[in-house]
Image (cartoon, rainbow, N blue to C red; front, side):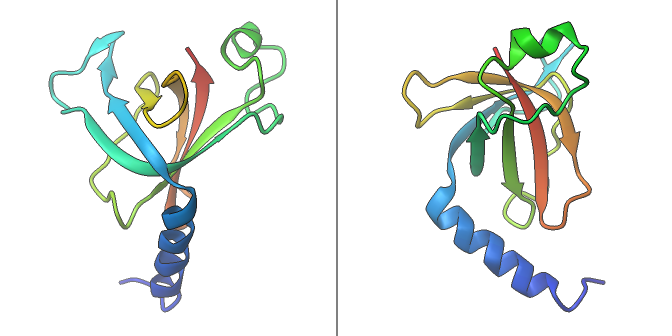
Amino acid sequence: MPAAFHEYRDRAVATVDRVMAEGIAFYFMRGGVTDPDRDNVTIRADLRVGTGDNAIDTRSRNWAQRIAAGKAQLHVDRATNPRLTVRKGDRIRAIERVGQPFFEVLRADDRAHGRLVLELGEI
């Protein structure tokens, strides 16, 4: 049963997304190839790139290779996209940005209220 504040949380998230969200294409992967069990989708979500904080262990060599300009995060509204299942290794494309950059999902945090938060690495 939803908590009393969920209605207000969902309205706040929707209000932010009306201003900040952009078109994001998901390419679901398994073992480095397209996952035939999950259909690719396009949604609207809040993509934040270059925030400058290290979301991964600083000793990781992949950090410098994957996130040269700082970390990237994608904030997905769960109320709008309740069936979206994202896994490490899936790819996303920012289809409304110049050059339509690709990112790889490094980590999916499904514990945030109202949002699915994805840590991304540049491809």
